[in-house]
Image: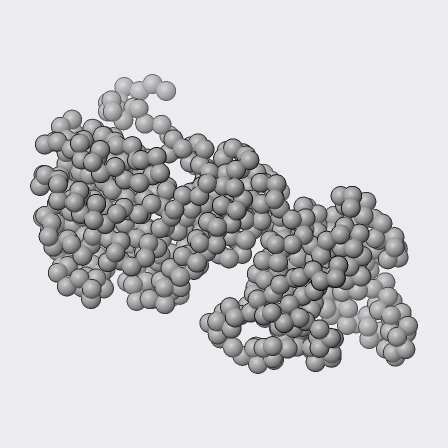
Length: 592
């Protein structure tokens, strides 16, 4: 493409940005109904309730320009941080359209093209070098150590009288490594006053006690140190683009002068202000991230992967058995997006974000399969009356693996929590369910289900247990909790699981998924015959109407409606007896 327009020579070297496939494109390409994104270090819980409510309340002002300088946001940030650091003033705070804008403006404010240089570690956040190139500023990089710790001595050796900016990311990206606080302070003190040290703390909230991890408490001692943070991670506002920096007052003043006047929109500003007040959401995110980071790190290590220590909301690891590129592709084909680190010149490594418990379990289950250590999971879904329970038990015996009685889980949980669970708040449900744990143990060649260390027995076969199971089964939070327990068992034991959402919601990556169906009239007749054999009197018409009503309820549920997984093997059992259906299922199974 030729043009006589005066394109800057240093700009001509830039390559176009190539975005990855969108979630919709991945669904279409690999014929997937569900895709999870664990590549961009976003908050798995979304945005805080207060932030979302503020956006709704302020959407009517979308036709208005925001107030220049975002004084309400700056004042809110100052008030928030002054509780711990009284020396921080509003004049030190600059807010931008994400940290990206701040980085860009720092280069524009502090570097003269062709004269100044900027130093940084390699690898590091790519925008530092990108914006340096845009400004035609020399880039000097110091390799991280082999374990991705910081070589501050090597970085200091790159600094001279023309070094205007020095970037250190802590915790680092993509490794998650936290800089040693004492070493970072010593490095800061060694820099000439003409060089601004920018410590990018986008992930600092996940690192632990702030006083032990950050040098923000020492800002008053420096004239050339800045701390940059963001609302994208712990506050869950990545899409709203809000970053901020504590910087020497004179620098902040010039940043405000050259910034585009309305770069932070009204909705973003109000969401950020409210997010600062939602301490409960922030702490929930931090607690979850730290706990799940530990679980995932341990699990990946057990799979033989080399896992690097992380103080962030992601984990960097080197896969065992398969190359990183192949792992990323195979996970993508299963509907799990992780980050290949080729762009960081680390083609042998993978970065995975900490997701929800369900997402993390799906990721680890898929990784076990890829590493050759996965358990065989067979799911049998379908409406009431198709013989799922009987067939699942027979198939488990045939394959020599466990049978997971999901009905027993609903019944036992119903007996423990009672009908009043329907009146509990979401928070109370989460607190109560966190106290429960299920286990499947092999005893005398049979698998036995335990709840909180106690064997589940005949108490669940009562009318009361069945009634309570129906009540709790309609509550989304209960279903979510039980799905978590079921996945945990599946991560430890090869099994056959039957239900209405085993293959779609609980084990979507199971290698063998069945969906059994039959005409309602056939299923009603089967139920009627069962009652006759037991000497119980039930009317066929009543049974048929109950089955039709249950079908409508299951298929129209807002959460996890009854439907076959797109890769499930659909078997119409209308014209087959139990043995015929069993032989059909066996024909698809690996030999016992």
